[in-house]
Image (cartoon, rainbow, N blue to C red; front, top):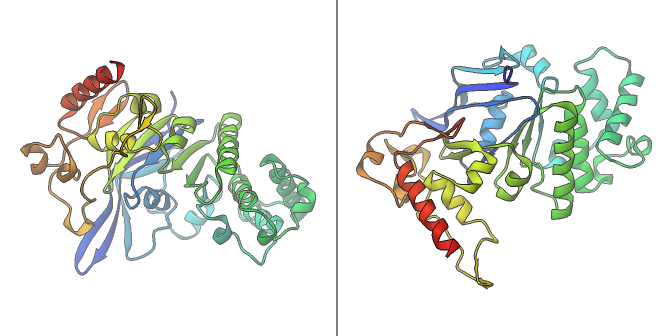
Length: 339
């Protein structure tokens, strides 16, 4: 496999508060290859959306983006500012936000907004940019694109607005597409259509996709690998198949167990599984494992030092000192299910 499209090494996001630095994203590292979708999952507040914003330099003060490197196609983009950052955003790296109605400009037609995205990075005529805008609308399956290019955002449904956001993101053929909960505000049928569209774009163009989501159903259908975050840290990263089949970190196991639809025995509904306790405050993060207070496998060593990422499978990693115990428990549960 060649050089990754994106290689993140030690990314952190900190916020200064009353003389203390609160770490919302803590030393995150991962790679994404061309034509691959990496999903980042976790509870609200775990830092997954903040990670996406940090990649594009969109963390406002008092936030600080730190790390060893963030390489896009071999170029370190960590610390880029001003014009250099503007040339990068919307060009080699593009983002699809959660809510298209607030991301789109209500006083510009969708055609004008796509043209603006193109001409900001390419020296081409307005007419050529407009022709490409029509082509992009057709690519994202908006019917009658020559007419729709003159519509304003409020003329469109939520699903169509999100298709426009995808068209804008694709305007300059980015190497990396960051999709932050791209279907949260849409109904189930439209969600599936949007995700199928992104998957088709990946297959046809080889674009790398970073998918931010809390929906494990989406993860199972549309991602190649999964990175699980908890309290700003990576706790598990594996192929989607391996992680969903045999989760190793206790937090990952809790997430999967709490997934709706898994709670039926002999046709009867059982009580929804839940993870006890609360996520620790950023101001009161424990010295050891951030999940220790909620973990059924915890031992004294878990509370003393932060567990390292331990290699598993061919290219996976789990930040847990109790992997073997978790694996044995998983096997025992599988035997009970079979019985």
